[in-house]
Length: 167
Image (cartoon, rainbow, N blue to C red; front, side, top):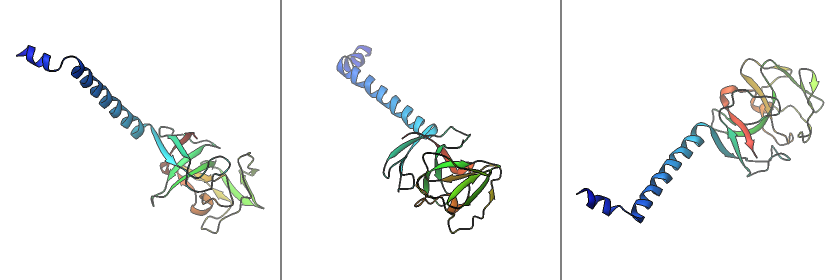
């Protein structure tokens, strides 16, 4: 009986069976990695122009829990909207916008990524704005067309799903 079973699966059939097992294991591993550790998104719109393009695919690290100035992050709002923006303000910072410029703790934001004037949007956000614990201020690089924290206010740490690491 044992010989019949082995004979049935010998040679090429056994090789195909082993390859199928390997493929299934790799597939399960890839699903786990993309579900737990990294994510993929597509940039929508021109708010990050000069750094990222409309339609560009980006990969983000889901494990990052500390967001620093200049990090490009993937944000998911409670409404389901998704954004890719740059962190310019962290908890405890005072954000101000005046004369077409962004000020963080009294110092003008400087960065070669800034494209256009930074003006306050018509929203409920009032300046100067002090960020509380767990709040971040995010903006797009193309300030003239970006819908960002100037419009919808600071984002919380839980809304930031990861830091973009492949552009």
